[in-house]
Image (tube, rainbow, N blue to C red):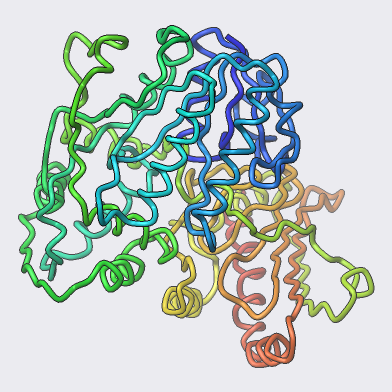
Length: 486
């Protein structure tokens, strides 16, 4: 089949595309920024088109000649996300009808109840829009997805690992039917061919286990080899307070934690398993919760996390290129530039540069970086806990602690765009040059575009620390590269 995948830069979409290709389908990916798919392993095997479902840009062209459209985008974490999700879905419906698309496949959430969270209401509304569109649609309703790199799994993992004793809100006693990411992908791939065109309905999908969130934490602890957790129930913790606690303890920022926690307030158990009539269960059954956790932890331990929630495109995030000239930016561009000769070949220096961040750290004054991360988390930012997907390799669009990879030229250039809360915009650029004599030159540049008086005040308040932070960073990167080349 000829398939269009929206949301190919996201957690599920980034895993679905290679599996559709493996099943023999032709795949077209719609993205607002084609650079974000430039470095993924399967980029050369797909057609990449530029477009935006929310802005209704490029949709008509993207749907031409396509038989199946996978809709895997949502505006979670964006202001007025319900309106954005609604308009985006309607835009796709119009383009799909005009192009003669045969099927829409949508991954949604559990059926929203009477007092459902805005997140669940929005997912349900989008599913209903597609089911009433006149284009045959298959909607999969999944609750918590368990897999390495998923936001729900990272929230569960960090809460359980970091808090041996936890004061818990009453929603941890609600029943949930989690599903392994491998089973979600199996359903999605099958949806391209196994549902005949008259099928136009939603299917509940879930794993074999029905657990409370408290039971999920205890089972996670057992699989991870941790002592049993002590959970102290308290009625006073509202979902709003809970989301702030999750944002503080886990890598999941408040803007994502809030709708996730809001969804957990309601029970999410499958009401039917009709999907098995079209996609039969594997001979050894669906993946159990503990097996799914084992598989996810193995991926994390082996640094083989295929996609991560942190690498999904952020709606409305700035993507302007690095301003190298103050006049180009229309105002002041502050810079801190460091250059060092390195007694190591360029490839050895590049290995250190590309491995920066995450578990390898930032090669200077770790406490200063940690404090900056804590301060960012305190004001609702992403902080340092996102880490990195792979300890040695990066590609455009990936999250790297509180940065995002804006550009990478292997062996030459790594440019990061700041995603911490700032009164302005910031970039960190690292370059590697061959000195022509068997060594190399390391060039490092931090650039900040202030926004208003607060931006200028921010730069000058932190400028005294640059010699320690950025100077130490350049010095230690050069030293690490030289040591590795000995």
